[in-house]
Image 1 (cartoon, helix red, strand yellow):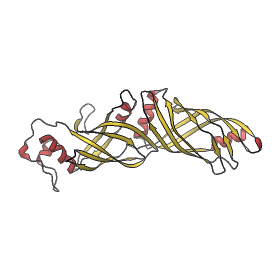
Image 2 (tube, helix red, strand yellow; image 1 turned 90 degrees about the horizontal axis):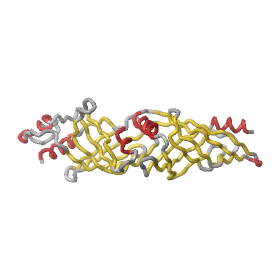
Image 3 (cartoon, rainbow, N blue to C red; image 1 turned 45 degrees about the vertical axis):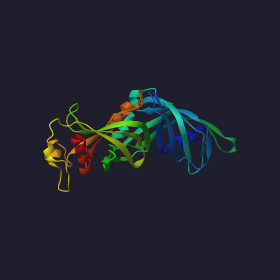
Image 4 (cartoon, one colour; image 1 turned 90 degrees about the vertical axis):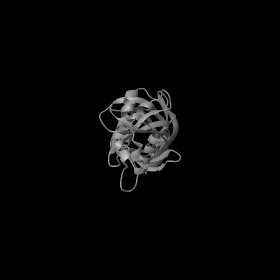
Length: 286
C-alpha cells in the first residue's frame, strides 16, 4: 500500500496559482497560497497537515505548513492564508527573489515532508513528500509610463508581473536613471509610492520628485514639447524619448526589512514619454 501511494504522490503535480507575500520584516514574511493538486490517482484520500522545507538551489531557506487536503479523482485545491514564514537562509531567499524578477522560469522545491494518508475502507499510509514547484518568473518586470499629471506632480506606471508571486513592499522609492556603467548612473527623477506587485498587468501611482540635472540650464532654450520632438532645453539636459532609461528600485520604508535589498533587483528598461520629459523640465526651471 505504501509503495503505491508513494508512487502516486511522486507523480502528482502541485500548481501554484497565487503566492502572496505581506508583512515583511528583517527575517520573516506572511505567505498566502492558492494552489491545485492534480494527477492524484483514481481514489480519493485525506492527507494530514505536514511541515515541509522550502528549498532553492539545494539550500533550505525556511519551513512551511501544508494544510489538511482531501483529494478526489480530479485532484484538490490547497489554500492557506497569512502563514508566517521565518527565513533561515537570507542569501538564498534573496537569490530566489532575484531570479524570480529576472528569469523567465525557475524551480524551487518542497522537501522532507512526512505525508500521513487515509484512504477508503480505513486504509492508511505514510510516505515521504518531496515536490518540485515549476513557476514562471517576472522575466525582467516590464514597466512603462501610462500617464503624467503635472499639476498634481504624479505619474502612473503600468507594470506587468508574469509570475504568480505578489509582494507587498509598502511605501517605496524608485528612480528613473540614465544608463552607463554601474556607479555612473544619472538620476532623472525620484518616484515615491505604495508598491505591491500584483499578478498580470497593474498600475501604480507615484509622487514625482525632480532632481537637479544641470546647474547651467539656459532658460531661453524653452521647455515646450510638441509633436515634432523634444525641446532644445531637453536636449541640452540629455533627455530623449528615443533613449532607454531604467526604472530602478532604491529602498522601502520598512527599516531593516529584507525588502530593502529585494527592491533593488527591479531595474527595468523604460522609455520616457514627452509629457514626462516636459514635467521633468518644469521641475528644473520652476
